[in-house]
Image (cartoon, rainbow, N blue to C red):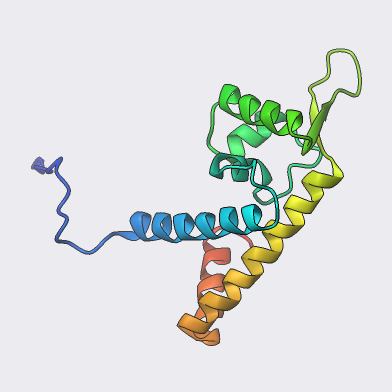
Length: 150
């Protein structure tokens, strides 16, 4: 079997691959979300906090599940949850002795969730304007299919 030599150096002259294109789009989306949050008066939130509020809602979730969903360590997620709890966006509630805590959004936290959803819808409309509605619908359909959401 022939071994392939692979370069560890990126070829910056080559067009970006799928992973980079998805990351660029996510970063652009996240910047818009953070800007909308700050304009709406949630200036105490930062980009890392968006990981807690991402789809599906954190409501009723265990911190360990939120960490896995966000591809973060449990410690990092608990740090974010502690910050958000101190700022009044959520609480962590245990239903009994020895049970795992579950996240409950406060009214302030639900407002953030609604604002984020609304802002994503606005961005979708903006991107549909760039691509054209048909191509944008095809993009959404393809992404849903690839993620088993059809």
